[in-house]
Image (cartoon, rainbow, N blue to C red):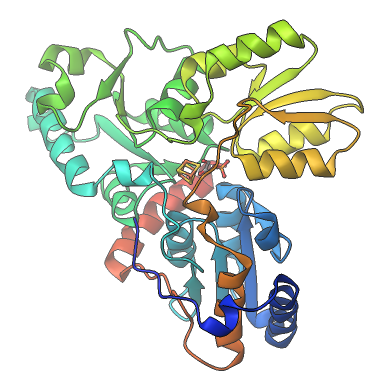
Length: 374
Ligand code: 13P
Ligand code: SF4
C-alpha cells in the first residue's frame, strides 16, 4: 500500500541533523504523555533512538492495545502496523505513519478481492453433502499480520484469526484443530515453515495457491487432499537469503551460528540453526555467551544495530550484500520531527491512518482471537 506522501516543509529539509534531533526531543518533551512513538526493529537508527517502545509486530501491537490513555501514537513502521494500531485503539486516539509510502510489499501480494474469489472457489471445490447441510467451518483462514485491514476483517468474518512471526505456531495449531483445511495468507514461507515444523509434509499436505490461476492452479482432488493451502506471497527482502550463503558460512566459519527470520524460504530455515521473529532473534543473540559468532538472516538495520550493541560478539548479515526493507526505511528523523512539531503547533495530526469502523470491528474479532491464544 503506497499513499501519496506530502513534501516535507523546506524549513525541515534544510535543517541540520543535529537540529532535527533537537526538535524531536523538544517536541517530545512538550507533548509529554500525550504522544507515544512506537518503532519497529527495522527502522533506521536515527528514528529508533527516539522511540518510546521498540519491538516486533506482536510486541508493538500489544503495546498499542494497552495505550488506552494516549491520544497520539506515532508508528514508525509500515502501513499495516499503523492500521493494526488504529484497529486496536479507540476512535478518540489517533495514529500516524510519518511517511505514507512506508508500505509492505508482501501485504500488497494479497488483495482482499482476490482472497474472496479464491475463498469462493475453494468452498465450491469442497462442496459436499455436509457443507450443503450447513457445516461451514471446514476452512479456517489465517492471515499473517502483514496484511491489509480488509483481509484481517475477512478472516474475522470467516471464523479465522491473525498471526505474527512471533506466535504463528500457536495460532496455526489452533486453526488446524478447528478446521479440516487451513487457508494461510499472504506469506507462503511463514506458513510452510511453521507447518513443516509441526510435522506436515510440504509435498503432500500443502499446496501453493496461485491467485492468478483458476482454483489456485490445482485440481479439485488436490485441493481436497491438502490440509494446508498457502497463498502465493512472500517477502522480497527475506527472499535475498539463500542456502548457498549458509553453505559458505558453514564452510568458512563452522562455529558461527545462523539465525533467520521465518519469512525466509524453507531450505534456508531448515539449514539455519534457529529461526524466529525479530524480537526472538534479538533475545537469542543477547542471551548467547561472549565471543559468540552469529550470521543473521533479516533486515540490515536490525543486524547492524545488534552488531553495534554487542561488541563482545561477532554479528554479521547472512547476506554479505545486506538486505534492506526500502519501504520500512522511508521514514526518517525529519518525517518524525514533522509529525511531532505539527502536534506541538496544535495542528491536526499529520498522516493519520484510519480504518473504517466496519472493517475495524471485524478485524478486532480476528485480533482478539489471536490475543486470547497467546
Ligand atoms: P516481525 O514479526 O519479526 O516484527 O516481522 C515483521 C516483518 O515485517 C518482518 O519482515
Ligand atoms: Fe514487508 Fe518484508 Fe519489509 Fe517486512 S521486510 S515490512 S515483510 S517487505
